[in-house]
Image 1: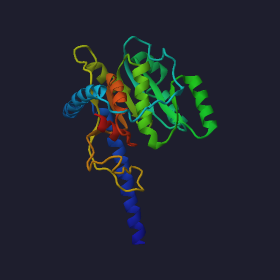
Image 2 (image 1 turned 120 degrees about the horizontal axis):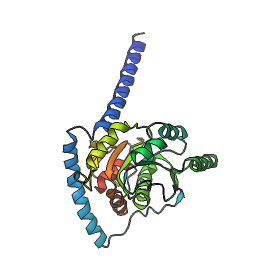
Image 3 (image 1 turned 180 degrees about the horizontal axis):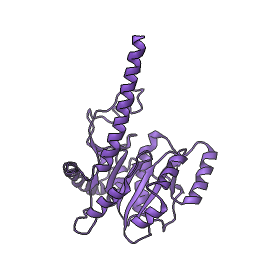
Image 4 (image 1 turned 135 degrees about the horizontal axis):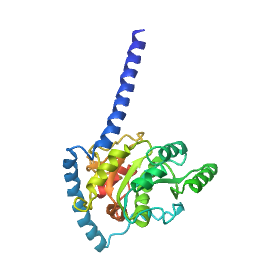
Length: 285
């Protein structure tokens, strides 16, 4: 009896911690750009971006081969006028999502990313997905895109371990078809945006006096590679030889000035790919 009570107590604590962590992450990810401590994170990231731009010039002039081609083709994509609702778009949000998550896409379209909100507040939202192994899922996605016109589907099979490819290809789409957006928000489909406050923040920093390129706002993380082979987050020493991660932006949501989408795509071509997308971006910073 005591053992059962202990197990139930531990489960209750675990559920509580998971719930509190979810609440904390939701609030923190959303409020991060507004809190004063962001200035510290932003200064840290500025140092990385200065180095990135410098390194990119070196890469463009050396003879190192391209490691990743990222030459996947678009199966579906929005019309070329999708981001042209205004000459200068405030933001493009790219939501990385699984092909089967029809409900999540529907919820996003009916809450913070309604057509009315996008048109009134001068932003756009696209869903970045790969292919499903099931033809009926792909067929349903084609119908969904025909109705909404907001899906970027690429010709690789979608999985958690292709999230890096999905994100980099999303950056390529933004730099090609939505370069008039000042900011790019990369966001997971299980993260909710408090639109009023978030866009208020963007509007304050996007006027001509305050706007700066090569900037990124995120929750900065550090950590150790997981060397357990059965772990979902396992990284071999071949994939990541260092014993400590380079500082990286936590993956559920981060904001960047859109000029960085092209830079990140180009730098990714010369960098050994890591399946953990946020860690990979930390490497190419």
